[in-house]
Each structure stands twice: as structure tokens, then as C-alpha cells.
Image 1 (cartoon, rainbow, N blue to C red):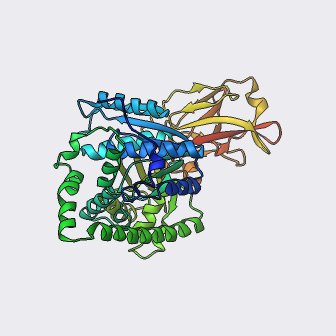
Image 2: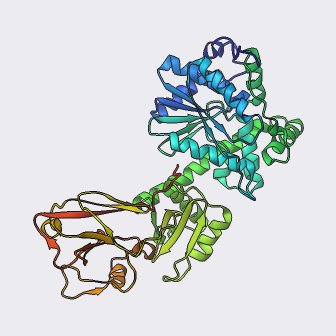
Image 3: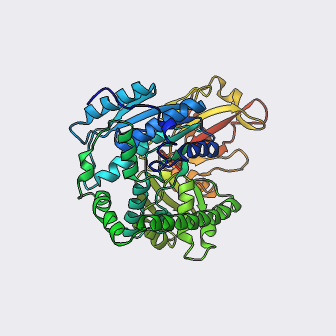
Length: 466
């Protein structure tokens, strides 16, 4: 591999080769910046021909527009030459004067998982961890990828969202994800790279037709083009029509969810059941996407409608997929991250002036605007925090008698899975408060009080995205 990684200026030569590369590529990047309000590009740089063309284009654009750019190479460690690929990508980035970062995975594909799907999910997991509201991730997906995705989804029985193929621009966690080359053919990217004298990595696993997408790319799409002239363009139009339908369904769902005042992690079943049965799956999936949980597979969707929604009120149905849990309590669905919480039985000493953190939430105090926990009562006392063990009683300050904590949780409509996670605050071994729900008798004050802030974080999705 030589040291002349490329010749000339990519942006300056686009006009010369507008028969090869989309001549509006810079306009598309302008559009991406205008729509996303981002001033940082994070480029997924594999070192292959597609991402090499994108890298040169985006870095040239960034220099002329004052956009910050950074390249990220994900080393999946699935190929023997992956370390050499990292060094190639680093040299290209150095030559272009672009910040470069590499992230190495362990190369261990979970048993029974698709290598392609695992690699894709890991890439996007890493990209999500790197974006903020100013960042747009750029990937080098092109028209051939778009058509392969449409066919792949069609063969799996996808609906309009899946048949939309690859979207040119969409929300991605806190930022955006864009594909500036989505209207260019693979062969045109290769021709352009050859004319520019670029060098790139050849990943021979792309020839392995045991992988579904490779088989579609190498066998099915060429056959379609040979037997049906204009097949690619017609399929692109089909994807566009399906995207319009998917967008319309999303707008219908958004209006209903916004009108119902739904919290991001909670959905009243009445909001869902007001729609015709054919529309309910789309409303449910839109809520899940907005909440950051992604979309479950067909089997899980069927379980939600056939097992979770009709279940008895006290059944406590639970459905898991990927990193998510979906639960139902009374007539409300709750989406949360999949977690294992095991609060200990022993109490923990606590200084109320500090924040106390747990894997599932944090406890702190702040000055109370009105009544709250009596500051004088806790000033020189031994304050500790514990959790339910069973059989606890609580005497709310405004009541004349104590009650079982279990009954109070039911009255406060606290979901069952939250009850064991709710901190109990003790002052000199006497129960003084229950999370943010209740101040106990003898510990409430109307002046000189503090407010207990219990921030439960189990409803925060680790890989939330739109």
C-alpha cells in the first residue's frame, strides 16, 4: 500500500465528474446542516471505498464551511487484517488533517446471533455514545445499500417503515444520522475513487454469499436489473412512497400521543385502544421509538397485543427485548431499561446534604418551597436509608393512624416493581419519609424544611433514538 492516499481536492472535482457522483453532494451536506442545526460531523470510516469517498468529500466540505469533523473507525476484530485496517484509516485521517479515533470490539458474536446484525448494532451503539445535540453522524450508505435494505425487509415481511429502506436523514439519540451518498450507485463511487487515485481496504467478507445482504447484492439485484430495466429506480420510488406513508402514520400517532399528554416512558392503554385495530401497532411502535426503546420484533408485538393488553389487572405481565422491558400496571404501559436491582436489607448511613446514588436512582434534598422534612429533626440525628423487607407500617403526617406500607403504595398507585426500589428514610431508626411520596408524622415542618428528591432512572433508555 503506497503513501499517495489520494490526489487533488474532492469537492473541487465534483463538477468535473457529475456523471459519476451526485453533483449536488455539497448541497446535500448544506441541507443536512440546515435541517439538523449541527456543526460537527462524526464520520463512520471503515476504510472501504464508500466511506473513503465520503471521508474525502465531508472533510473538504468541512474546511470550506467551518464544520468540525472527526472520523471514527470501529474495529470489530472479525478479520485477521483488522489491525492493518486501523493503521490505514489513521494514515488517511492524518493526511487529511482530521481528528481520528478507533474503538475496538472483542469480536465475540453472541451465540445464535447474525454477525452482520451484531456488527451493525455495535457500531450504532458506539456512535450513540459519541453524539450530542451538535453532532451529525455521517455514514457512506449508497443507493445499492438502499435497495438491498428494501429487499431484505420485504423478504422478512416488513411494513411501510421497513420498506422505506434507508432514510437520508433522521434523528439519532441526541443528534442526527445522515447518508449524503444515498443517491449514488456503488459502481460510480468506485469509478470516482479510481479517478482520484484513492486507496481503500477490500473486505473479502463482503463476497461471502452466506450473508443475506451479500447474496442480495451479488446475485439478486444484478438479476433484477438484467430482467427488469429500471428496476433500481422503480424500487427507489417504491421506498419513497413507503416513506411518505410511514411519515403520515407517524404524524397520526404523534398527534394522538401529544394530545393524550403521554410521558415518554408511559402509555395509557386507552390512548392505544381508541384507534382501529389496524392502526394500533403503528401507534404502539411510534411510542416505543419516541421513548427510546426501538421497535420490538413481530413476535414481541404479538405478545403485547395478545397477552399483555388483555391480562388481568393483577397479572403483572412483562415482555423483554434487547435492552428493554415493557410492563403493565393497571391501565398503563411502562417502558424501562432491562436491569437487575437487588436492594439490600440493611440501612445505609446518609448525610442529607449529599446525594446518595444507587444503580436505579438517586436521593437528594433541596430547600422546600412549603412544607417538607423538618430540618431541625435531622440536624443532629442519625439519618439512614433502607428499603422494604415486608410488613412495614407508615404513619403519614396528615393522617390519624398508621397503615401498612403495601396499602399506601397501592393507594399512591406506585407500580409494584418501583416499591422495592423506593428508599425509606429513617431518623434515629424511626421511619421519617418514603421516597418523595410521604413525610411521616412527627417529621413534617411548614418552615425550615427540606424537600426529598427521589430520581428513579429505570425509565431512561441506554440507547434511546428516534
